[in-house]
Amino acid sequence: METTVVTPGQRLGYSEEYASGTGTYERNGILYASVVGMRRIVPSVKDDQLPTLIVEREKEQSAVPGVHSVVTGKVIRVTPSQAVVAIMVVGDSLCKEDFLGVIRTQDVRATEKDQVKIYNSFRPGDIVRAEVISLGDARSYYLSTAKNELGVIFATSVAGATMIPISWQSMQCPKTKTIEYRKCAKPF
Image (cartoon, rainbow, N blue to C red; front, top):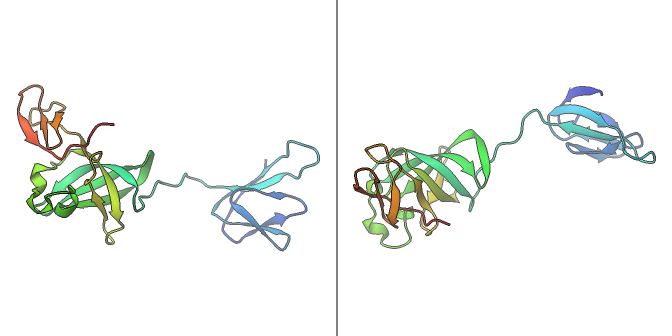
């Protein structure tokens, strides 16, 4: 099986010899690469069909957050005005690159926005589910936890135990019975 590295726009063959497959396109009877990858010829299954010319990418594309995507991430830093989140999952797809998100005080919950204290909603190390509300600036996406199903989904207490949500705004340590404030996600 013949494989060669190709770049976008590179001529691969003629449409009378090959069928156009993934990573390729045809223009004026000539097949071209549309992505960087390995040129491969896939033999046809039926005798009356042409072999298919494809370009396989070296690595899979990473999931990239978009507006209205639900993301899961870890809180890495908390300031009085925002929580910084390292985005790990977009929808059901794992992120291969690092993306940062910011949950600002006004985006923590839908009501009583002026009374939100970030430290009473998130702590470093918490795992949160949030929605991307804006592509933000060059450094980070703007995230929101204002819906009931969004917020902290996993947290550990000072004692190191996995905390249990007891209301939409607090979690309890099963070891010490200490209650800590969090903006909890409603379980599905």
